[in-house]
Image 1 (cartoon, one colour):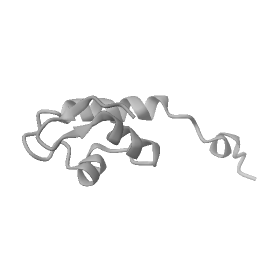
Image 2 (cartoon, one colour):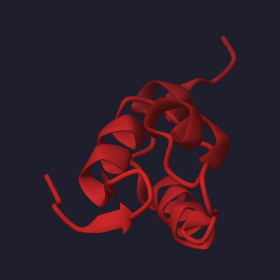
Image 3 (cartoon, one colour):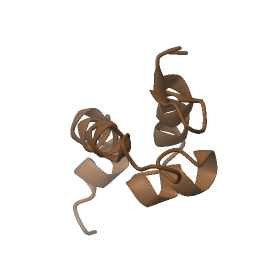
Length: 71
């Protein structure tokens, strides 16, 4: 797990956010609810947004959804 601190106010590390992204969280607001990151001063919100958007672009596509031919 990545040990880089993203939210200093609430001591939330990048690895914790990535853990939730891998579990299916796909929004900054959900990350905030689960970790409290970005809920105090908000200075880290752009970085959280960047992590979320980067993960959504890189996440593996579900093969079942890609192969669904509507049959």
